[in-house]
Image (cartoon, rainbow, N blue to C red; front, side):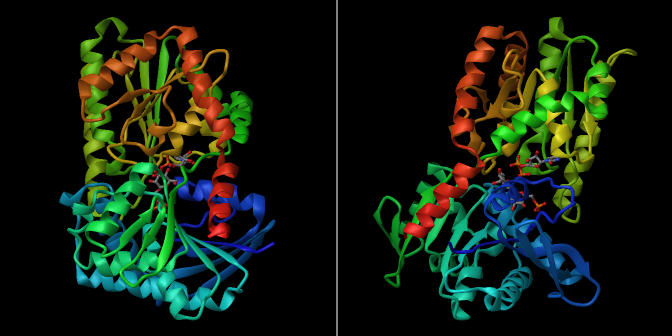
Length: 455
Ligand SMILES: O=P(O)(O)OC[C@H]1O[C@H](O[C@H]2O[C@H](CO)[C@@H](O)[C@H](O)[C@H]2O)[C@H](O)[C@@H](O)[C@@H]1O
Ligand SMILES: O=c1ccn([C@@H]2O[C@H](COP(=O)(O)OP(=O)(O)O)[C@@H](O)[C@H]2O)c(=O)[nH]1
C-alpha cells in the first residue's frame, strides 16, 4: 500500500488547539490511514525560514518548517490571506495585490518543494491542500518528483471574471495542471473552474471532469464535499453533558432557548450581518423576546491582517450596541466570546442549542454546520439556519436556508426555528443526519484518494 503524504500550510500538531476545518478534517483523515503530514510549523523563526521539526504521534509522522517573520507577513498574511483569500471569497474589493507578496508566496512554495522533494518516494500518494500551495506541484515536478499528485481546494472557486482580475492569474493557475486530480468542495466550484479553463486558461474541457491544458496535458477534476467524523461527534456530544463548562452554560439559560454560532473571526463568515439580523429579530418578534439567548463563539483568526482587526472592532461595537438596547438586569440577549474551545466542549454546546446559526457570505464547506447537526439529540433536535452560500447548503437541505444579506429573512428564520414543532424538527434532522452518516470524513478521504489512484 502506498504511503499517504498530506501537505498543507496549517498542520494540526498533536496537543495544539484546532480551529479551522482543514486541520480538523485532515487530522481525522490521517488518523485512519497514517502517513506523513508536511507543512508550516505554526512558528516564526527569528532569522530565516526553513528550520525543520520532526515529530511522530501514533501512525502520523509530522515534518514542519518554521517561517521567518518576513515570509509569514508576506506569504501567509500577505499573498495567501490578503490577495487569494478575498479573491476566492468573491471579495475583489478587499484584494490587496503586490508583486512583493507574490514573490514571497512563490519563494515559500519553492522552499516547501526543496524540503519535501527529497522525502518522497515514487509510490507515494501526495495530497496537497488549499490556496496557499497552488504552485507547489509544478515546483515538485521540476525537482524530479514522479509520484501521483492531487490537490484539494477547501475554499470556493469564484467566477472566472473575478479570477481574471488577479494580475498574473494565468501563471498562477496554470500551476494546477501539474496535478493528476484537482478536487473541489461542490459541483458549482467545479463548473466555475471549468469555465475559467475555457475562457481564460487557454485550455479545453474534454468531458465533465477531464481537462486539457494549452500544452496538451490532461488532468482530472471533480467535486468531493468534505465532511466530519459523524459517529465520533455524535458520541462526544452525548457524553459532553457531564462537562463542567457545558453544565455551566445549561444552568445559565434556565428558561428559554439558546442559539449558537461558532466561526473563526473572519469576514467571510458574515458575522456583522448575523449580529444585525439578530437585532432585527429582537425588534420584529417582541413576543419571543427574553426567550432566546444568542451565543457567538468567534476565536480570533489571522490577527495580523488589518481587515480582520477592523472586523473585531466592528463586532465588539455591534454586540455592545445590541445588549445596550435590549438587555434586562436578568437577561442579556447576546454573548460574544473570542475564546477557542475543544471539540469535546463545542459538541456539548451545540447539543444544548435549539438553533445553530451558520450564515457565511461565502464558505467553501463549513464544517460547523455539519457538526451542529451531528451533535443533536434525536429525541429533541435543534434547527439549523444555514446560508445558501455555504458549500454545506448543497447537502444539508433540511436546514432553514437563508440569504445572509437579507437581515429580515434571517430574523424570520430564527423566529420560525424557535416555534418549529418537534415532528418537523425530527423530520428535517433525520434527512441531514442520514447524509452525514453515509458521507462522513472517511467516505470523503476514500472517494478522493480512489479517484486519484484511478487516474
Ligand atoms: O489556517 P488558518 O489561516 O488559521 O485558517 C483556518 C482554515 O480556514 C479555511 O478553511 C476552509 O476549509 C474547511 C474544510 O474544508 C471548509 O469547511 C471551510 O469552508 C474553509 O474556509 C482555509 O481554507 C484553510 O486552509 C485554513 O486552514
Ligand atoms: O473554538 C473553536 C472554534 C472552531 N473550532 C473548529 O474549527 C472548525 C471550523 O471549520 P469550518 O469548516 O466551519 O470553517 P473554517 O474555519 O475552516 O473556515 C470546526 O471543526 C470547528 O469545530 C474549534 O475546534 N474550536
